[in-house]
Image (cartoon, rainbow, N blue to C red; front, top):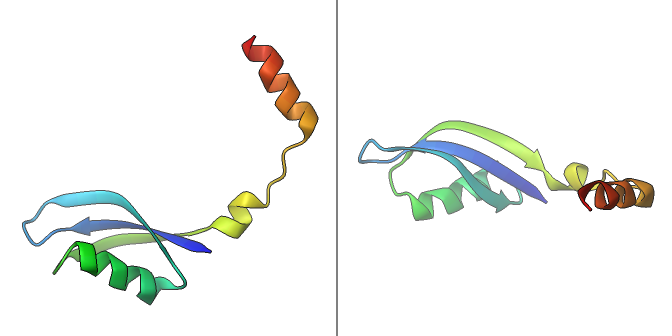
Length: 71
């Protein structure tokens, strides 16, 4: 699943950074964004691929070393 990180300028002129919206593609996410922020101007948009972010596996030894470092 994809997430989109939008930076927008509202119709009142307020800048809002990092509005994360999940969608199947950019038009779907932008439609959802415009339901929340009517007449906003998209300043920036970054795509975050959750499948790639979650594909990084963690070794059990790494987890155990983190636990022992904090105790």
